[in-house]
Image (tube, rainbow over all chains, first blue to last red; front, side, top):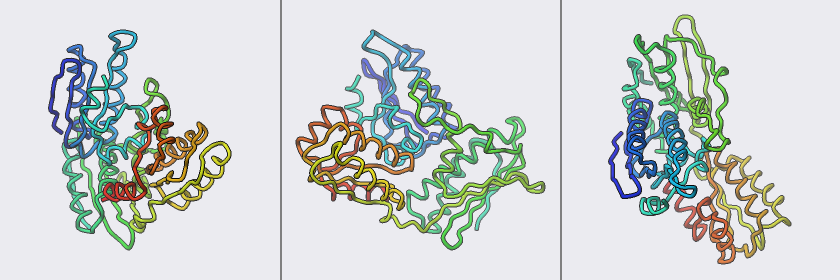
Length: 116
Length: 247
């Protein structure tokens, strides 16, 4: 797994590529938690080059989104983890595990970043 | 048939995935089937590494595959703690995010991605997990088109749902609903589309909508359902998208 960071003024973009399995999932969690510690709770995950995700990775996404959404800037604005560029195989895992409707999923990074 | 013996630690997962990819290429499986087997084996191996052996005293996993007639079989054997799949709680697939429990997803995925999953304890060999993928399913039988005429509202939702259920029972997992000739859609029409979509998703499939007329498209936009459904300009475009996805 590789993670590329890009900071925007309001949003952080993490491009996650390769494999997120039980071996690499803790690294993904640390990358997300690092942003939380810096007070950055608006995150877009670009999954365009993610080839594999197992349940260990799904757990990180679920726990991460829960944490992000606990953070509130105002009543109307808060944190979230949103997804861009979901490959068909990853979408299939999301569908099978009932996650598709739990996340905001955007066709590309521009839309996902702009959604905040 | 081929066998590989690995030491049970998480760094072996990538190697296991490559072993399955090589096997799948050797027997000529398509990309999607290969991916399904890889993910199921990844989940199985993760369980062994994390739960069968103590972290400070890792043992071995013996991984082997076999192709016979119309099935691809993978076996994982370990000598760690015994395992009763019935003790794992069923996964939570429906709760909202705040309450969503994340346990049990691995075993659930194994059973959804493979056609047979058997756990067996042998006093001599230890835990033996056998997973089988049937190779007989013709991809073209996986997809179907359901055309609807006139309207989709309370007057015909029951009928349309019945038609959809018949198609799903036949083994179809990718359903394209052709809305070219639908000029009116009510909230009960939208609701039945959501129900069919959810059902297909939990079966590992998808609902695709094709050819929305301007009025119907407007209903979808107003309700935000253009974000929820996968919508194609025509049935051909939907078929094409699915073919690309299946490669």
